[in-house]
Length: 454
Image (cartoon, rainbow, N blue to C red; front, top):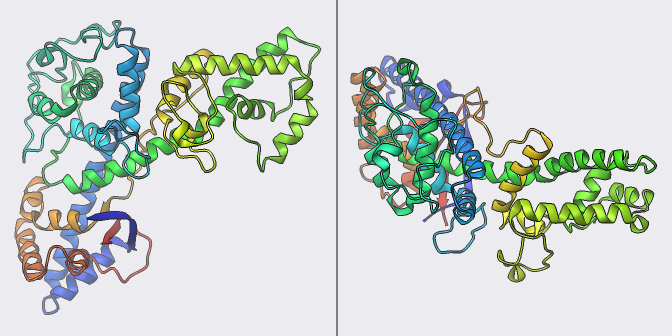
């Protein structure tokens, strides 16, 4: 079984690495080697562009989904919390898994596949002249849903584009978790709504055919980014919120100095039952403001702790051990953000809390890391490389590249791996080394990653 705990990453200048490998397998035909290297360079760049476009749209849809769920007055609280949890954790067996091990990769894959639309070889064009009627954008996004997240008529409620050719496929794909699928599809609908009246501007999206391995790798990265963004920035955002609350408190008590710049962060630690170990600056501030003797600040902390519990729909509690933790009893912020030695197992409760802080104090907060305007690296493991090199004729047709060169490379690749055991490390390395010379240590646009079996 593959594992991500042990791996080696090869970095190489894209063209020089591709050319070196092509020259090695075409030692008697330098012209053919240059043709193959150029072909693969253009192909990898096109795939990278497509995957980054899909990633950017998927992130946009995730933000739409998170905010729509939070603002909905129609969905019940249980379904909201289940969505937040499924976004971050693998919960198929009713047990939270630490995000770094399992996480919400499946959910990220579903968002990505909702953007692709279909896994068929060719996507159907949008019927520009057909009509589609979206619900009023002044209504609750989930107005046509049942409170439990189910939809009685998904064929009309979840339509995203005219005569939506992908909806049936996506509904079947999301059959194992219909509520999550419905939320993803309504976010897809809201994204597509913006193109109504000018469908000719809708992005030309690829299908996910022969992209399975790349989608899985991309989903893994997105999963880790999502939780990391949430837990690493929680205290900073909370401190911004507390600073706003202190400004209001200062207006009511002009004779008390609440201007210490570290005071908001200190109070967050106290509100969240977090230890000040190693934070001598906060300990100094605590002594400086005489916190233990300040009834005003102690009452403020109690009120803010209660308010935070209301935001999460669960009280803030303190647990020393993981086996003491119980969602029905409350949330330990240390276990929510993975503070110190504590595992990150309650991060889903942070989502509604942060969104409420943003709304109440009018502060900018990003829950889902937004897509970047520049292309991110694409990771190719042996599985992805095999999938790519074994279907070059398809990709050549898809991207209007030289089919003769594609067939030549594909034939060489199949001969190269024909006698190798697919379950061996030699096979994995052969896939990677056929594509690129992994001995060069230069800056690159791509990471070629081989996962060792352990």
